[in-house]
Every structure is written in C-alpha cells, then in structure tokens.
Length: 334
Image (tube, rainbow, N blue to C red; front, side, top):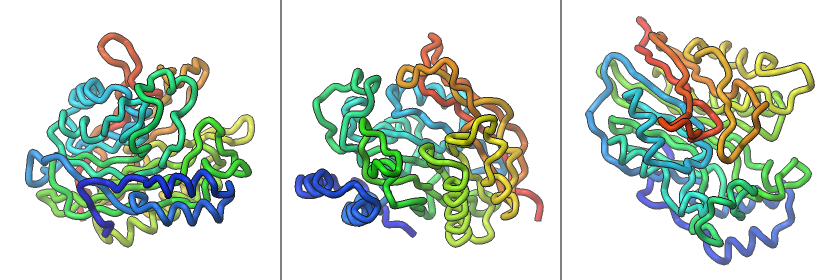
C-alpha cells in the first residue's frame, strides 16, 4: 500500500533551489524526485455516499486539462451519475487555476471521496495560453496529477510511478522549455468494496512526449503493479494513454503495441467507445488535432454499455481538450 495523507507536504525553498540549480539530466532528476516526499504519497479526502458498490459499476475517465472550471466540470460529470471517476491533469495550487485544489472541489460537488497523486511539480506557470489564466505570479504548490473519485470508501490505494528519468526536465529527452517539471507519468490504483467483492480501478496517464515503445514499457509496469496490488480482483483501467503521439507519418493509435500487451494479460478494450476523443479547447486551440487518446480496459468484468461524453458546457464552451469516456460494467461470471 502507498501511504495516504490528508495534506501533501509542499516543496521547500531549499528543495526548489536545488531543483533550479541541478543539471538537466536523468540522473539529477531521479535524485530530485526521490527527495520530494509528496511525489511518493497519496492525498485523500472527501466523503463517500454509500458503503459499497452495487452489482454494476459506472465509471468515467476524463483528462480535464488542468480543470479550469471545477464546478462546471462536476456538473458535467454528474449527468452520467457515475460510481467512479478517473481524472488526469488535475491542478492543485497552480496559479492558472486560481491556486485551487481542483480534485477536492470536483469530489465535493459530486459527493465523493477522492485520492490524488502528484504527476509533476511544475516550476513555471505553463504555456502562453495557460499564463493568460494565472491569478498570481507564482504557484502556491505547483502540483499537477491524477485522481480517483468514488462514491464508496477506498479500502486500499497504490501509487504506481511509470518513469523517473525526466521527460519534462531533461532537454535531451525533449523537455518543453515553457513547462519545466519534476516528476513523471503515473497510475493511481484503488480497491473499492462492492456487493460482489472488491473491484480495482486505475487512473492512468501515459507519456505524450514519446513513441509507442516507451508507452508499451509504461503499460507493462502498470499491469505488473496492478497484479501485485489486487491479485485476482476484477480491474478497470482508464485514462489518457496518448496513443498515436510521435509515431511515424501514416501511423496512429492502431500501431500502439500496448493494446496487445494488455490483451495478453487478459484485458479487453471493448469497454472503450469508438471514435476520436480530442477537441479544440481554450488552452489547446488546434482545430486539426483529431486523435483517439482516451481508453478504458477491463479484466474480469463484462461491459454492459459504453460511450463518450463531449466536453462542452451548456453554452458550448469546451471544458477540456479531451472528451470523457465511460462504461457500465459488472463482474464476469466465474
């Protein structure tokens, strides 16, 4: 199990100075990552509304692109009446989202408990479109990460770090100079009680700044860790897998080897609805970017229904550059 805390310890002035002074290479990044306690903890809060899940589970996975609008995003999700929500790109103490703990606010509005894990400590304010939303000249905490929200209590959680070498820290690895960060992609797994026993749900976010081989390695680590954490339990994995990024011309998500890897471990991708999951947004206004990035895979469950929820508020304003994907499932007969 991963240690769970009520509040994450902030980066100290000394730690920040060390980060800014460190050579931008993989070895330095690993040392810095190891020295930040919040990178190895899970923050939990909120209040569940039920003791256990029923026969069926409705789950939503959504990359909320910083979560500029927590209240509106919660109302958007509420239309699906989910039991579980898997979120990625959630800000906590970032100037671009008014220093808010966006996961906590969405969970409160939905009447759910939550677990939050830090993907990155962001050193700057973000790109040009993000800086336009900044309310302050600096981030209060600089946390950015993944979350699991549930209407029932979590009986266990595990933070699964998928890399530590610093894709977004080392320029040799393609780091964006406008978005310097310490951290790396992760998965956050939780075991939820149900009337049929425990169910494991996993919120994940794979690397965009890489090709298929790197994402395949991340998926391999994720699946192995889930087997150790929740042996024998039904599993639902959902999130932004960044499929199709940095592939040769003419190739797309169908050329990602991570799909076959998961299938060999007994997972089924039919929990994912067909079609693209990206759209132009306030932060990512690219009209020609049409990709299928967001997926749900299940093992030990049967998919009853699935779909995509367009990330537009009632006035047509985009809440994210990703649409939400969802499924309804029940444990498969044994």
